[in-house]
Image 1: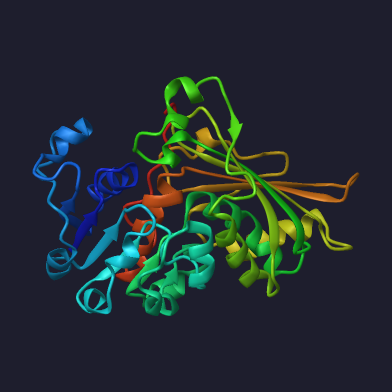
Image 2 (image 1 turned 60 degrees about the vertical axis):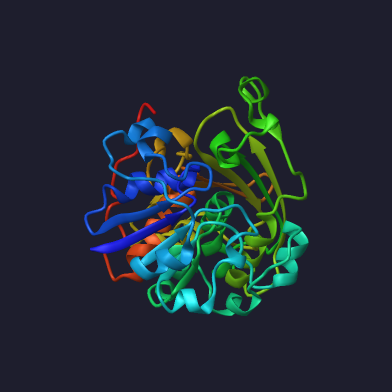
Length: 346
C-alpha cells in the first residue's frame, strides 16, 4: 500500500486528490496538511468527506517525507520550489501539482510568474508528467511536475501532429475555455457568481502563464521552436476545459493522415478517446473523469486544421493526472483507481 501525503489538501485540487485516492485500491492517504484549517476534521471543511476520519495537519514537509512514499504538493506557484530539496527527495517521491518545476528554463519561469525560483538545481531532473508523452520517464522519477489543465488539453490535442510533421509549427492558434474551479478556491472578485454567471470572457490575453509551458512541450514534439497564440476564456461552469486549436496542415496532408497519427500515438493510451468523423468533444462528456476527448476536421476551403480537445480541469487537468503519474512511479497499471465513467448529469 502506497503511503500518501498531501500538502495543500483543502484547495480544489487537494480535495480532488483525496476523492480519487480514497477510491484507489493501492494507496492510503496518511497525512493531509492545510495552513488555513490545521486542527480541523477534513469533513468539516468539505462535508462530502464527513465519513472520512482525517484531520488537517499543520504543514511539515520534512515530517511528511519521513512517513510517506509520495507527497503531492497542491500549492500556489512559487511555494514548492522553496520546499523541495535533495534531502526531501532522498526520503520520498514528490509530485508537484503547481507550476514550479514545469519549465526547464528558470529565467522563463521567473519572467512569466514574477517570482524567484528557489531550487534551480532540481529543474534538470524534474519530469514533465504528461503521462501519454513522458510516461516512461515518470516511471523512474523522484520529482514529477504535474502539467496544468490548459496545457494538458492543448498539448495532447496537437503533439502527435507536430511530432509527425503534419502541421506547420508557425501560426498555431489555441482558443480555450475553462470552468471556474480552474481559478482555485481563494476569494477573487473575477470568479464571484455575479461576475461569471451568464457570462463568458477572455482573460490574461497574450499573457497567460500556461503559454510558455505549451510552447516548450510542443517544441519538443516538433523538433523546432513553436510560438503560438493562446487565448483563455472563463466559462460559467464548475469544471471543464475545451481547447479549439487551429493550425495549417503541410502540403498534401489528408484527414486520414491526421487520424492515423492520432491512432499511432494514442491508440494504446487508456485515457485518450478519439472521436469519430463529425463528432467533437464536449466538456459534459468528460466531467469527473480522467479522459481527454479529441476530435478534428480539415477545412479544405481555408486549408485549416481544427482540432478540439476536452477534459475535466480538476481530474485529467490536475488530480487525476497526478494519480496517473503516481501509478507509473510505483509500477502500477496506469489506470489504477482512475477508470470511473464520466459523471452525467454533473
